[in-house]
Image (cartoon, rainbow, N blue to C red):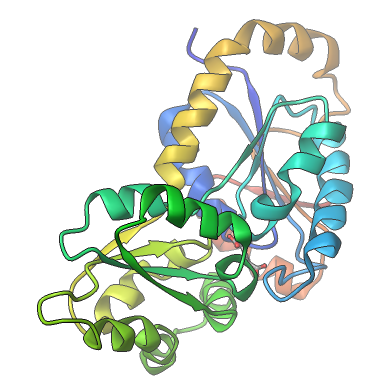
Length: 281
Ligand code: DGL
C-alpha cells in the first residue's frame, strides 16, 4: 500500500500550511490534495483559545464534507494546540496536528540553549510547557511570540518584498536572551513553531546575528500522514468509489473562507504549491 488515491485536506488560518503540504506531497506524491485557508478569521495567533477551537471545528467540518477528505491535517500550531481534541471528537476522519519541533531541536543542541519562535498564542500554551518539560528539561528555551512575522509571510505570499529590518526586529529577542547566558552557551537552534515561518526561512537566515539550525515540523507531520495513509488506503479506495462523485471538487483545489482580492493575490503562490484552482468554501 502506498497511500495513493487518499484524499488529504490541509488546513491553516492562512498560507502557512502550504509549507506542511509541501512535505506531505514529497512523502505521498500520488495523494489527492485539498487546501483550506480560513483567511476570513485570520490571524488565529491573537485570538482566545476557545474561539479558535470552535472556529477550527466549524470550518474543518465543512472542508471534510465538501472534499470527502480521508485524512485531515491541521497545519497550524495555534489551532492544533487547542482544537485537536474537539476535532477528533466530532469528525469521522483521522486528524493530524502540528507540534512545535522542541524534541529534535533539543536533541541536536550542543549549547543546550534553543529558541521557540511562534505566535503569541502558541508560546504561552501549557502544551508547550509540557513539551519543554518532556524533551528539553535541561535546555534554556527562549520563547518569542510574533504576529508580525505571520503577516510578513502572508505579504510575501502576495508578492510583496520583505523588509529585512522588520524580520530582524522580530527575532532579536531570541538572540539577545542568548547573549546573557554563560560564556559559550549561546542559542544554536530555533524551532519554527508557526507554519508560516518556513516561508520566511531565507530572510530569517539572512538577518540572524549568527548561524543556527531552523527546525520546522513539516517532515514529522508528513511521516505521520504517510503512516496513516498506508493503514487506511483500503478504506479510502472504498470511500473513493462511493463518494468521489462529480460533486467533489477536483484535487488541487484550494479553498478560502473569504474570496476577496487579497485571496486572489495568493493564486501564483498556491499554484507553485500545486493548487491551481481557488474556490470559496
Ligand atoms: N500558521 C499558524 C500557526 O502555525 C498561525 C498563523 C496565525 O496567527 O493565524 O500557528
